[in-house]
Length: 241
Image (cartoon, rainbow, N blue to C red; front, side, top):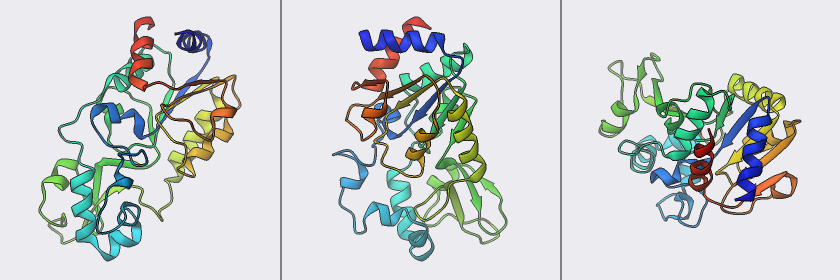
């Protein structure tokens, strides 16, 4: 528990704490991640998942896209876990200034967090490509076939697909938060997705912490690496906040 004690002391002393999270934050809610051995990218489909989740595939094989999207990315029936809830408590008590997430499930907001930057968008937001009318995730996931607006336009999830750029304002805000924080806690990410992973290079604070079950290529540049589950670590943090 010495590592967690060190982390707790840094959290208490830091002037600004940012949490940067990936798919591993939500796996303890029952969701699959993408790149682990039992992740989505290791399952067998008619098309590779990385191809399905591309802008080109969405445009050219829209029906096939939504078959995969509704089958694999529907989080209805799943709930935020201990990590989401503890991060929300940390924000409420002034220990956490911002969450930067690569996830699209909206669990941080559902747990009560306010300052959340969603680098890859959210399944909770959907818009008609023709008239731009808003639709929630329940409408999209309960629709049959390709979800359509009454105006005839296709409803597209507000998620960043392969070949699409990150939202510029969200990206700049994330970089600014990382540049200005004392303590950056990175959790549940392989740090293999770019440009998001490269944002760590903007950190100029005192302590960089990585919490991940598996080793990453960034381990050597961190001040503290904890190879444990996020749920285990944040359950300990909860006792002290």
